[in-house]
Amino acid sequence: MKLGLYYRCIVADKNGKVVKRTHWKKSRSFVLQFLQHIELLSFHAHNAYPAPISMKDIGGVARTVYTSTYPSTALYFAMNAPDNNGSYGLVVGTGTAAPTNADYALATIIGHGTGAGQLDYGAHSRTTTGIVGANVDYIISRTYYNGSGASITVNEIGVYCCSQDSDNSTRCFCIVRDVITAITVANTQTLTVQYTLRTTV
Image (cartoon, rainbow, N blue to C red; front, side, top):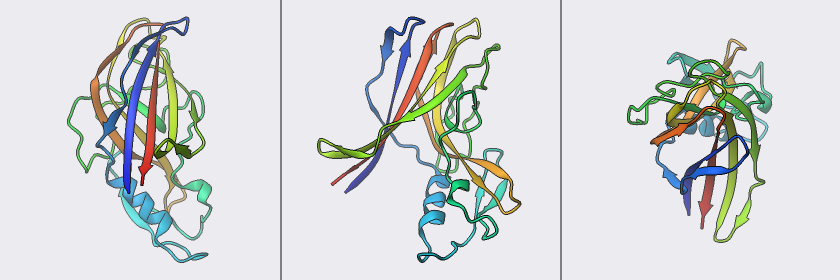
């Protein structure tokens, strides 16, 4: 069996006409915090508390994630950020540094908004996990609107999730970071980023 992650980017004009669409490309950039979250959520007996794990948040600070005081799974590995929230979920940036296993954040994230150098982060959408041909696919998407008044070049994309730490504070963690072929998003255009998590028998 193979587990793979793929991404593509779609740019559309203000009328919704697609002006650029990349092919699906293989992501090679799951980072350490991804498997640490899988370990946290899976390696425990049924109805037993998992062992806490120390992992770096997007500020590079080591956080102890999980405590039995806050056991709800709603508090961990959350990626479905709502509209107008650029702090987690699918995120985009301008950095060009090559990805490494130890990355804990995008190099230079593009902030949410309509000011200079910002993109308006939309809500997420997803497909229901299911069999697609010879694969099992799960796709998540997010669209960003450029209302900054100038073109913005996107060089990196990724995924942040949110989890509760032992201080009962919500922390964000990078689980995927990809450096892509530069994509320019003109003023009034939208960029849609899609990630497909795929298993193949």
